[in-house]
Length: 614
Image (cartoon, rainbow, N blue to C red; front, side, top):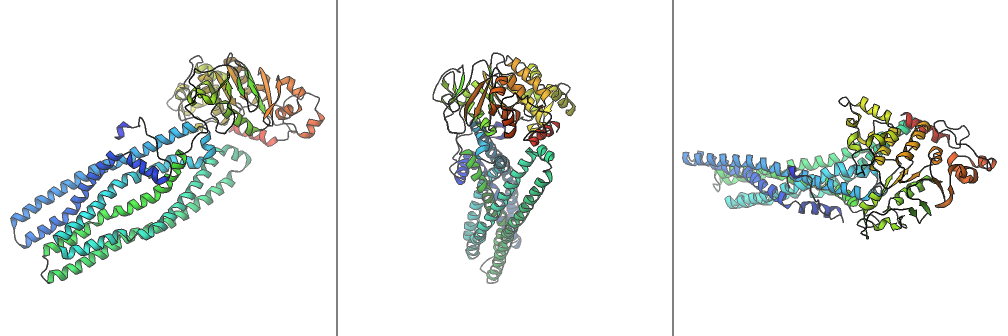
């Protein structure tokens, strides 16, 4: 696999039973690249370690005054230099290819897993951990995969040098053959402590990343309630803990690196002392002494890869464990489905709550528990992340359809939709029926001011459709992001559209126009809106009130306001005392853009104003 061939058409099925198994699986799937890197590495390291023999031969030829052998040795040195350059060039090329292709394979697997799990991913794995796995961890795993071949080439080269010295000069070769393994393995007792310190550093770094991610996601609300300094102090303390842990880890690795310099130096001293003694006794020549001395000095180069592979494994092991934990997650239902059928149509029915949304109608659902609304939205989309009875569409269980079919039949927009970076044209380029134009969807979602803001923020875009949207739409306010997401859902024009609080971050005037546009554009289509907004409820064909997980009342909004106190309490946000004093009267809802002074939850209304103004 070459870099220009990426992405993989099929990245394969990973062995995610454990971190080491995942590393082994990644390396096994790149045997071709590993073998190429190994061969080029052997050529490079062997050529480097052959230079001392050439130097020894040259010195001995000079001592013997043999011009012929000196010229021959010069030719050998030129050949070694050429081999070093060629081997190093192609080794680097093969190693980088292995690194990038391994990281790309893992990124594809993580992207597919995220799409496969959907919203269940962040419920089962912290958002900060997902960010860490998909960014830094894939780089560390790629580093280890490519380092294995270079380490193998270095280890084989060291063995070859030891054998060559034993054959070339047994008296000194024995010293080197015994000393080199000691030098290479002397740092092993320190590796567990270095690994544990590195694990602590990564754990603290993961916590700091998660805290930073949560802080950035809620920055507007934090500024509105004055909590920005509090979270800033928390992140400052977390970052200092990461710094202290990184310093402790670096100290241990510096000790290991120092030993990798000290021990070969001591071995070199022993070889020189022993060689001088043997030369005085006449048992070895000057050229042989220079050869052995140079070989011991040069062999330090491949020995550095012993420390590198230890560091690479130390850093990649916890990364592999995190990646394996994410890749091992499975959905509770079979995404392939057990029924092969065309897309069903008809009423949408939830057996768990008794909710029935008539086909081709506009149904609004009011839940007393906001968390229940999110769970209901997941369930209505089919293949819910939590166990329970399957939702029926036209009498067909959605969980018996494949995940792709269920997503095509029912589109769910949650209360926190994600906007990917790119142009507005790319954002609205989604699988669609082709019936709803992008212009009509943007108009229905009241995105005129959003288009103006995008054009003003783009220096080279006169057409709003070519204006760029930043990552997650962070340059836009919460209400603007919400309206763009609604426009994207309207362009898709699914048979059944489920919207969870689609106008919670907009003012009441805009919300009223969105309600009219939504009803007009979705005419003849099944639409379910989970909301407590009186403006949306008043335009629904039918309102369903859920209380304690079951349907408690159905009817028109104005009827339920007067006949169902619990419904009125949720929609108008009354306190219990106010419910008792106004149980038999119809209470008009307060404007959502100005919090009612008697409201039991004034802070929520204030936060909505803050979010929209931000």
